[in-house]
Amino acid sequence: MNDTNPFPIPQNETWYILDSTKIQEFMECPRKYMKMRLLGWTPIAPNLHLTFGSAHHDAMEYLLINGIQKESLKGAIDAFLKTYYEKLTKIVNPDGRPIPSEFMLVLLDSMIEQGDINLREFYSASLKYYQVYYKEYKDKVNRPKSPGDAILALTHYILNHEHESSEREVLHTEVSGTVPIDDERVLHFRIDAILKDVLGIFIQEHKTLSRKDNKWINKWHLKTQIGTYLHVLHMMFPEGSIKGLEVNGMCLYTNEVLTGDSPHGKQEVIRVPISKSKELMAAWLWNVRHWYDLIDWNMERLKEASPDDDILSCFPMNTENCDSYFGCMFEPYCRLWPNPLKHCIEPPPGFKVDWWNPADREKTASKVVHLEKGENDDTT
Ligand code: SF4
Image (cartoon, rainbow, N blue to C red):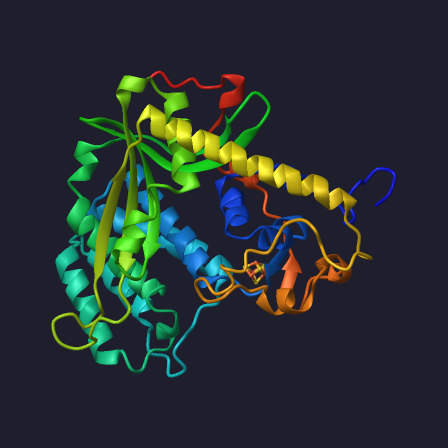
């Protein structure tokens, strides 16, 4: 602590920029939140699942803007690969044989050159390539989050959802900004798309998954993020015009048989429609304010903490979450450190300092609104 910084660790401007993701992280485990968002500790290795999700999101945005049609497939693939290879290294076959995504691109280019894109033929030929060469190609280590899987998924999406281009009007893609939760506090947000059909205006949120089950389908209804997006929608558009939100899930299966009818596996679009009554939105609002209060409370306690303390008496450890998903990345350190302030001058091995700033997304958004200031020129 010094005269200008009341905290025992250096402050960062991102501490005070909260979005649904940060609140959800705090809900999962306040100690994890502290390490990720107050110390800025981030794994050095790129995250395949997050990178694939971002790349898929960019491809879906391309399809929304340019139409869900066969002529958009090449552009959507290019958008996907650009984002994917910004973070991940391309895996090639040592014998020079094209990896599946390269084979697919050559095939698609030749169809485009001949002026005859036959998506069903393209899909079948791509599957055949997988079937014959599956054992030999190297980028299967990333399945089902590989470029080849993504191209098949985009092809599948166009084949099955082409009709939506004429049924759904795209009002916005990439909407970012801030929404108030009371007179003083805001949440930052970034919405994938706002669409309109005969039943009204709705948000479309793109997700990817590799196993379909009820747990995945049911988890969205109560998520803080989904409530935030609906709150934004209610502040942007008249009450009677709103339909709700649609989770647009793309399931890429890993363990389907690699021989027989389904050599590569399969893809499936899973849509989860969500709408909330006024009362349910009021419950969401109370909840989100309460968790925001708890973050503020812990920030105040952090001011009183010191590296000399035996234990850290704020940002408690939620020890029921240490084994969720693949296990918490901070587990070895929580096991050893009763007070992480004694060990936080540098990030631990395998981590770097990287600050997540939700407001940065405004720089690349197609539309930015600060709803607490009454900014909203949407008259739809
Ligand atoms: S290991 Fe457990 S207690 Fe520690 S940060 Fe992770 S979830 Fe929290």
